[in-house]
Length: 109
Image 1 (tube, rainbow, N blue to C red):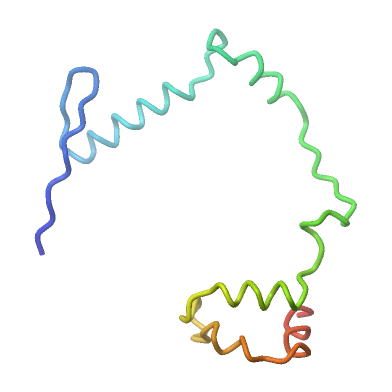
Image 2 (spheres, rainbow, N blue to C red; image 1 turned 120 degrees about the vertical axis):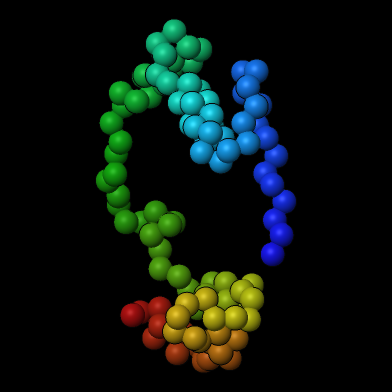
């Protein structure tokens, strides 16, 4: 099987075609972009945001914590392609004709 060679990458006047060298060039670039330079624009804002604590508390009533309804599950399954997503070998199309009580059972597992 033929695969075309990767195009060379140009960085600071040097050309690289070796995958390891290209990976190193990208790593150097991203390290420089994300380096925490206190003089960089936005550094003060970033530092103030990083100093804030993260609050993971929850009331449990947030919309993302509400259980799925049978209707939502049916809609999600109807958007799926007809193939098995997991090693269980059960295609989505097998689940679509199930009764509401069967869906309710699955949702309560």
